[in-house]
Image (cartoon, rainbow, N blue to C red; front, side, top):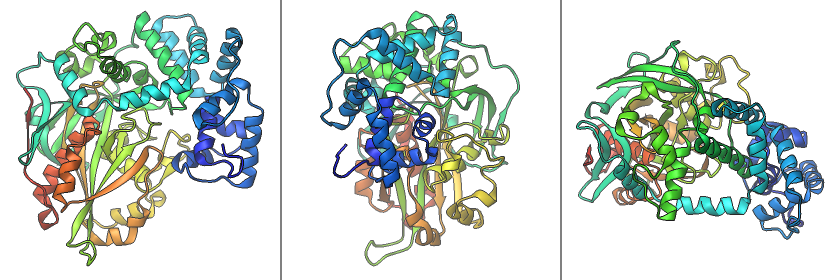
Length: 529
């Protein structure tokens, strides 16, 4: 932290990470509102008010030498390193005290004891001990190396692991114009593709079932140790982990123009401590040049060993969500050229659990309820919520910032002005599901979608109000008429596999319905061999 210029959102976040506190716990530690902490995540260059600067100064001055050293490592400041003779038991005790400040981590520790068959408190002690030994800079270096494993290598490795595919299912592959074939890790079936399904109540018919969806997982020592490591790293890096309800897919039936199926409810922590560990295991193996075949990835061998287990969604935890290519009509301009659609693409933040620092369409979110568990079961409910949160700045719909105290967060009287305008313009907004797939990375279900805003007035009125939240590191815009830039975008190796799946299916559908506003070559998909 520069003593001359003072604190910024970035350095405040670094202090939070050094303290290893959640947003709620950090806000309580400073005696401020959670939304102020969220603003620091959203705007790293933001300079807090003078009274807030003083609170941050005090928090750093009162911190232990270990915390100051971690802060220095995160910011590059010159602060003495931790004494090499620091007592391990004392460091572990300090780490264990920090665990008690985060209720979501506390819930995760209780669940880990349950899943592993440990005596209560065992997970807390193990995570505290691991946390005391972690070096944040090592974790940051590993995160950078993981990002260098691109989409193509991930898809190729998973193609090799699941080489014994079924006759009818296989990985999504597409040819964009005359260029080389693009292969992803998303498992598809011909009837799941090109759904052209409006996300209205008549066509979007996922329903919540009250039937039991299987018991808790039983973790062996290796799986439990991986979960311990995950929780320790989450605290060390300040990653948001919120134990909120999450939909799990139990049955699916999709046809042209229709989505149907059954959902159960689980908790996000269960997913984070099991299926979500598969991606990191794969990336670490690829970084080390280790084998990625069956028998060499213990967690994948346990949770998702073959194509049959991927397809057997009723017998495993299958979480996931929806993500959409957003296309907004723009009028002709003497500076830009003819009328087109502006296409929005994000680079994901490093603070998110899913696809950090990868390219993705926007909005993108896990399918989960807010307050109406049955009404929110429809895919369109999640997509409209994510539009409010990720495009129009509604932080009260973000369950990672605070608790949902409002009975109906999507009530018309609470909608943002841009969303209220769209809802009031029946012909202005079109939301369609363009397919369905199961992502081999973690077994997640993926509903790619296309959001089209055809009313030209919208961009003139509200284009300046489109602003991403903390989940995005940056936002890019592309013209639907710029075929060269779109070709480069499609072949960028920084994509997440599900993001590329949604982009290609969205462009394919937009070409069919966009008329003269769209200049995209033919996009033909097939099942990869």
